[in-house]
Amino acid sequence: MKPIWIVDDDDSIRWVLEKALARENLATKSFTNARDAMTALQHESPQVLVSDIRMHGASGLELLQVVKAKHAGLPVIIMTAFSDLDSAVAAFQGGAFEYLAKPFDLEKAVELIRRALDESLREASVEQTISETPEILGQAPAMQDVFRAIGRLSQSNVTVLITGESGSGKELVARALHKHSPRSSQPFIALNTAAIPKDLLESELFGHERGAFTGAQATRRGRFEQAEGGTLFLDEIGDMPFDLQTRLLRVLSDGHFYRVGGHQPMKANVRVIAATHQNLETRVKEGLFREDLYHRLNVIRLRLPSLCERREDIPLLTKYFLTQSAKQLGVEAKRMSEPALQFLSGLDFPGNVRQLENLCNWITVMAPGQTVEILDLPPDIFPQPVNSEGSASLAATSGAQFIAKSRDAAMLTSVRMSASESTSSETQKTWAALLEDEATQMLVQGQTEVIDKLGKIFESVVIRAALKHTHGRKNDAAIRLGIGRNTITRKIQELGILGVKDE
Image (cartoon, rainbow, N blue to C red; front, side, top):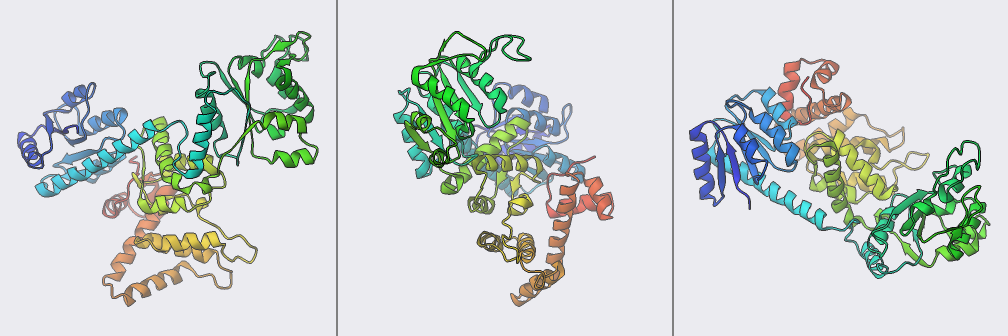
């Protein structure tokens, strides 16, 4: 395990933390200024970094920025003797793990460092799992069948037909088949036949000669020529126009084709992998797909399971996509709470893996704070009613029941509101009635300080809604809410609301 770095220009602070951590059998390395720590980061890194915020030269916030640029997942604890809210907000905006005000209780400081250490080791484990995982992620039995098939086909050049719902990752499977084949050193060329206009698709596939048609000012190589010696992946093959199916069949039969406007036959040494979300047998019966081409493509068929058939993979995929999204944006990866992960695992995801990836991109940009709760997820993923009479679907009911079990009272109130929206207009309750129900339940349970507890929930929900509406800009949110800048700043601190922009 790497040492814990302590960066502070106060000798006594460094000494106290070094001794306390040594008693916990934790190795430390100390720096008297941020510049020295930045220099050391060029060739090494800590497990956890604890830094003062105000020092001679570069500040702790500047160091935080450098750390997050190089090691996004490294927990950083910011210390300061100046317990001002602006510094706290700036620290969290910069991706700090926690904010520690001086003078601090030594035991609590060590406990905080321990928590950061656990987080660091957990993140390292996740990154290692992801880095050691092949290009397709999956631990579910259905995906293991796919992996075994890829392994069996690794030394084969046979044509493969991949079937599965849209967004299930068919191109990833095609790329894996290519990567583990004897053609791996040659090109992998992908073409979505449904995305190319019919009058251009022939040229895209086979190329064209100069002057073959209006606008053909130069000879152009098609995808078959580009993939020479390698693999050509034809996605959504079921949408290919019927007349082009004949030309494709010719290539698969004897390996020859002609460019558009050409008279010289071209030889194609290409492995074809096709994919579709449609039922090709049905399209053959309907006369929309050539039966002989179907049999040419359907030499080996791989069916890719939908995401709802492999729910146990959703947590792993979520962590992977959040990590990838954070790397692309240059920010620290968000973490899903356990209830939020369980909730996602219970969703159907009709858009499959692609929908989950898009959701993770949304979370990286829009979700407040580093730990994402169910309440932070976009409203459109929550199950909605399905019939005209307004009765809730089974999915909506189960989703509401799941969240209703959460201990977070704010989350509970939100879900009850969602549940009320899915009832008929005659029985729909107002949010005030729901609040009354919640207050009554708390009183029946014998809870005290009910007004204070509900007041904090109310303020947290309203302020979060305002911040989400203003994309985290607290000044704009304060104006919308009709409160002062100092008031919203104080409440953000009291309620532990993160992801706030300081204008």
